[in-house]
Amino acid sequence: MADPTIEEHRKALAGAVGNDAVRWDAESLAAHRRDYWFLNVLRAQRGRLSNDALCIVSPTSVEQIQTALRYANQQRLPVVPFGAGSGVCGGVQPDARSIVIDMRRMDRIVELNETALTVRVQAGKMGNLFESELNTAGYSAGHFPQSIDVSTVGGWVSTRAAGQYSTRYGNIEDMLLAFEAVLPDGRVVRTRVGPRSATGPDLRHFFLGAEGTLGVLTEITLRIFPRPESMVAQAFSFATIHDGLEAIRLFMRAGWRPPVVRLYDGIETARLFTAVSKGDNCLMLLVSEGPEALTAAESSACAGICAVQGGESVGREPVDRWLSERNHVPHFDMFIERGIVLDTIEVATTWDRIHDLYREVIAALQQVPGIMVASGHSSHSYAQGTNIYFTFAARPEDPSKEESTYLECWKQAMEATLRCGGTIAHHHGVGRLRVPWMARELGTGAELLRQLKRVFDPNGIMNPGVLIPVDSGKSKG
Ligand SMILES: Cc1cc2nc3c(=O)[nH]c(=O)nc-3n(C[C@H](O)[C@H](O)[C@H](O)COP(=O)(O)OP(=O)(O)OC[C@H]3O[C@@H](n4cnc5c(N)ncnc54)[C@H](O)[C@@H]3O)c2cc1C
Image (cartoon, rainbow, N blue to C red; front, side, top):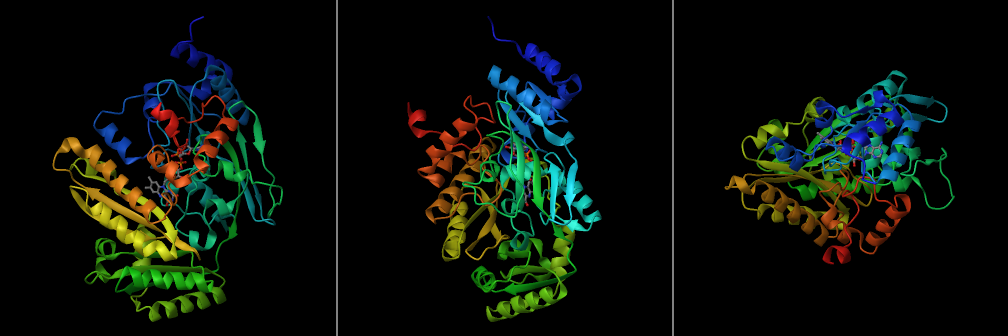
């Protein structure tokens, strides 16, 4: 018997899942063609990204997701989970046979437990609405990705996201207490909520950063925090990035955890904070939050450490500016129109290697023909190390080289990071973009990850092409 046609699949799915939950009109398909990966924005702008999915499923219940996945699994159709499409690594890029599952109609806070300080929320809840509902009740999730207005809670877990206040409140893996997910064969897996558990390997970590390759997350239980009583903001200027990083290392080592710790190199200080930029000084922003006794002690101890490292206080105005503008990001389109390719690349390493990593990645980016800007800042710190969030912009002389120039910048940054012993992704995930370096990142673990994928998803229907390193043996053959 011949395989069902695209039209037959659409009708069968609508019949099984419900007519109001399955769409394939041109507008719906166009709205789910890609995430916010620069290369796909560029390709869409140039008319080179035309593939539409088979259909968009917008479920309101776990049962509808089970039905859709069982159908996809039987028919061997790819499934692409969709949060809000703000991912920046190509995690959403369906092909003509793909079923996209858009989670945004599953958007309720199911339970707020004020005694245990936990919240159960459906995975499609938009970040800004989630935080504002928590605020109304006197709480915060403590998770503030720059994309909070355009991303979902399920997307945060699926990409291992980090928020701007992570240095005190942690990243999403520190906040995730439990989850519910639908596996490709339609089974539902739920984990138990508790302060901790010693029951073997932790299933949460399979879904943290899985980027839709193992199943669909439907419900998330997160820690919450009472809203802070007080806040102290301060900023310091350092002669070099080395001095500023040393100050951060020392306050992390001493046990201080200001939620916001950001250190911009000279180029970014000059670009973003002209009022306090002089020569190539580096600006540090610090925010302390919590009970007054804690914020007073923390801010004064951190100021003392900064002074010892040569940091000069420049008041709180730069922090206030950053707080009011922190989620404004210029659209890619205005750069693309001028023939400029650009992106941000977040990597991390330990304190003993961070200076080399910063220097090597900047030097590697500067070698790329057409490079205009290579800069970086640290924004998420730990007792053991920190991240650097690099920004590059390049304009190739020959416009036909825009994709190759973009990919060369990524290659240079990834190779330099691996040479310096860093990890190739701090919080944006892997998507399609970082797959070529995953085998080197994971070593022997690459084959284990491939085997794990086969256990969850033996037919390989979940978001193919994303995250999982390609088996080099197979690709040679
Ligand atoms: C301007 C801007 C600023 C950003 N700032 C930050 C930042 O500060 N910190 C940060 O960490 N990231 C940031 N990002 C990246 C992005 O917002 C995050 O990766 C975010 O977590 C993605 O959420 P989403 O809901 O939009 O997911 P999508 O982009 O829709 O999906 C991301 C991946 O997760 C999968 N997925 C989504 N939902 C589910 C689900 N329910 N079940 C299973 N798989 C699922 C998708 O298949 C895809 O592979 C930024 C992006 C932009 C555009």
